[in-house]
Length: 145
Length: 145
DNA sequence: AAAAATTATATCGTGCACCATATAAATGTG
DNA sequence: CACATTTATATGGTGCACGATATAATTTTT
Image (cartoon, rainbow over all chains, first blue to last red; front, side, top):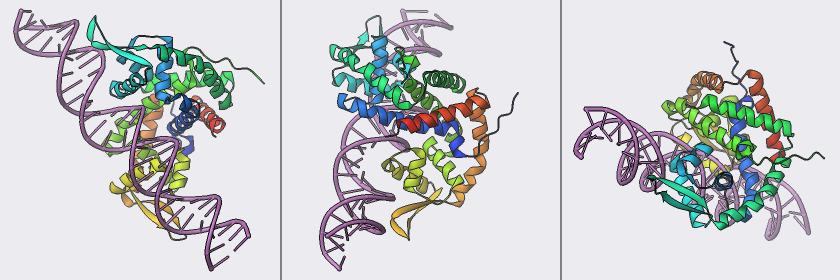
């Protein structure tokens, strides 16, 4: 059992690092997404659907590590924008299946350029980014209830 | 100029990693902070003031990488809870100085236990955490406008 | 098969978080 | 010194984000 010393300096706290990084990432994405009329949470939802279309609300919420009560209104906005459709699963009427529309699929073409630009702007190497994603994945597993 | 390949897999995207990590961290902190009647943004604000008391709204906003329009209502809530006081700077009436009250200072005794518990629960080593904070700091600098 | 427990979404209330804009104090310029 | 510009905070509107609760469909238990 190794003892880890708690940092006294606020700047050294991992929670502050993740918290502020999220603010900066969100604003940086907004520069690209604003002209598409999307927010980052809406965009990452589309990214998931581009990879795996026709998923339930719960499945999307799991991918985003987010409450379904947050997701429902977001999905309604994406529906109102015409990018997704929401229909009850005939096999299990409790489930709502979210599917991409033609409009939602079309947005996909914009995505690679945005991603590439964001990655470049981080100023991090490919290895550093890979390591970052792996470390945060481990942290997420540890802190999960 | 090194070319970095953009990941196609949503799980590999650094933005998703930071985004979901923030959700998990927020909920994990809430388990500790709930009984103190604090949210994480309020708590990290207090952490900053414990380190550097009597700071302006703008200085705190800079530390949290957050708009002052977000911070003002948060600070009013902390004031209503009795943890801070807000007074205009006599030397520059535009500035609002936020200072800890006795109540706000008292909360500090709870902090080390919370931090230690959170660090342990991440399941990350001291080196991994240090590296994570450093990497996110670099990312933040790169993405800043 | 009826009752109980579980599961999947949705609704409601509070608190961030941002942008655009407003206001007022301080500073710079003619 | 008057006027424009900049700086510091606040206000209003939209969209997350979460916990508590509601509702309805499925599954389990009796």
